[in-house]
Length: 400
Image (tube, rainbow, N blue to C red; front, side, top):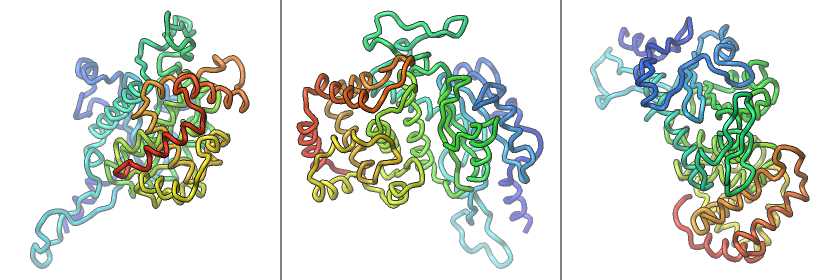
């Protein structure tokens, strides 16, 4: 029984003061080590609509307390709360004799099974790798974006190939991208409604106008998300949404086919069976059972004879997307990324930054911009694109 008590005690969340960065087993909060790892800070920075200390206070009266372990990298700020994961009898010896219970271990695997500070370091590293992959697909680098002068005003880079590049150095945003992992829906709900969190946006992702940060909140479903590969893909999916929306600044709605397709492509690179979806509509419900996008596209191409892209362009919001829209958008973006990578990067550049943050971009203007971008960069009409893409999609193999 003593072993059982000790095992359970080791998995209980920390109760009391917030974690001390000096206790970080990876960098010990030492400036030289942090610099080598690309870490700027472990606490005390702006986050959401306030800062890390005020976000901590949102959960100070919780019992038990799930402390948040904070970290700030070159392009991303992150908080990862402690969480309870399901327990299982560990070890390879099912029979240890009468009255000798097996030791209980957390079901969490991979990086999720690490100690909290090591876990947040590992996930920051993956988040920064996602940022680098997004830059690779968009054919951009840090120097392509505006720097901020001493007054915080953006200074556009000279000779930028795509003209206007946003309002700041982080893919066009003035502030770093933010991500907060919370234990479950209760904590998540409080954070997105709280004035020190996302202040009533009622969305898991928002542009924080005070700082110009794209801020994202996710949760681990009270410990039911315990697989490291699944959680990594889940994180990458929503970071991809934030980054394509923030590219050349989030001043108007990103074309939904690009928004959804890009996020599904990025997630699929980490987890081919991943099936994260925005919102809780019918597409998300159906998609939760889907683990093979490739076959799903083929099935739907046999039933739906088009037009395809023209119908996707007509959708004004992700809330209008069906499951078919999602898998077609994924497949089309993957086709562009693999078969026409430079054209994809240029199409994305042409569709972002249209307003230079000075005026709204209406539906008609965006539709014309999309048609022009396809004609200019692919030399294709929508009908010609449908034929090229569907022929490719029918031959594709694998899950994603």
